[in-house]
Each structure stands twice: as C-alpha cells, then as structure tokens.
Image (cartoon, rainbow, N blue to C red; front, top):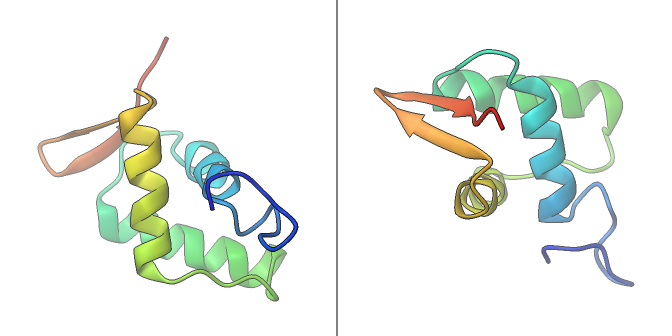
Length: 81
C-alpha cells in the first residue's frame, strides 16, 4: 500500500502519489485546490490509474507523518529542509 508491490503499481502506491503531491506543491495550496491539481494531472498523465479522495488523503497523511508537509491556516505547504 505504501510502497509498490506485486499487486500495487508504482503510480497507485502512496509513496508515488505523495511524490506527485510534493511536485505540485510549489507554493502553499488549499486542500481542494491540491485535489483538483492532482486529479487534473492524473487525467492527463495517468488516465488508467485514477485515485479516489481517500487515497489522496492517505498520501497526505504519509507526507505529514514523515515531516514533508505542514497544514497551517487552511493551506498545505511543503516543509523546506
């Protein structure tokens, strides 16, 4: 689920979805804007690998627990290291 396996393709694994999120987050965004960006990007680049909102939120949870994201004042932003 987190990492790709025999049954979970890399573009569906949470680590892959999280990488897409980090790539899109060049500036802080609201959750809804980030979700729209992910859906739009996936419809163009990975039309055979759609994700639902719960999978998107799980990827954000993973990034948050690893310290890669912050949520402040209604905006999601990348943590600069």
